[in-house]
Image (tube, rainbow, N blue to C red):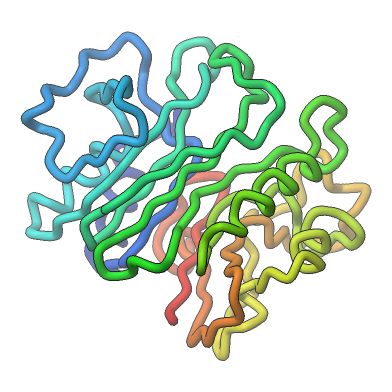
Amino acid sequence: MEENYEEKLNEFVNAICCEKPDIIALQEVNQTCCKAPVPESELVGFCPCDTSTVIREDNHVYNAVRKPKERGLHYYWTWLGMKIGYGKYDEGMAFMSLSPITETNVLLVSKVNDYNNWKTRKIIGIRTETAPKEWFYSVHYGWWNDEDEPFQSQWETTASHMKQHETVWLMGDFNSPAEVRGEGYDMIKAAGWHDSYLQAAQKDSGITVGKVIDGWREKISSTDGMRIDQIWCSKKTVVESSRVFFNGCNHGIVSDHYGVMIEI
């Protein structure tokens, strides 16, 4: 959906090839519904979350994996389409991993489970060969005050499910700015989860949306932006650094949300 998509895709790929993150969690990863399917023989490193998944030729994560491979950097990956976006896109969640993906998991966190309903929310998880006791989940939750699909219900479903795992990393758009008290961010923290940004020995501003957007202006007085994209861990962990990427200073802007990278 991004304007100048090819330019932004190349910026994204260049950053990946430069930084070489071990795990990359992505949200709102689209493909056009009417595009041709990619032949199975070309889906190198793909580990499906669902056997009915069809990868189409303009799928973002497919392109984001294919281009680094041309430079000798091989990522394993998964993608799950969850709902129709803007009437023409399969909108989904994705992971890229330098280590082979050994297991995937899909958790419905919304009350609704309708591919044609934009409020459908699922999170996807992976385990990898190099971290067999750790689960990584790519998340994108609803808003705190949504009458139909509030954050609180989606978080409670998530927290209950994660008790079965030894160590969990939740990565993505929480729609719960760290600057807002008494809502989603505080609920996660009260449940015993650890914000990697607070744990980090070195950190920057943490801002991942460069301005206060609609729906938050009445709650946030700062004009500097919001720390709305976060990485949480179920255990207290030593975090060496937390840095924001794709913000125009640390690699070019590729989306209305910036990226977060931590080093442990």
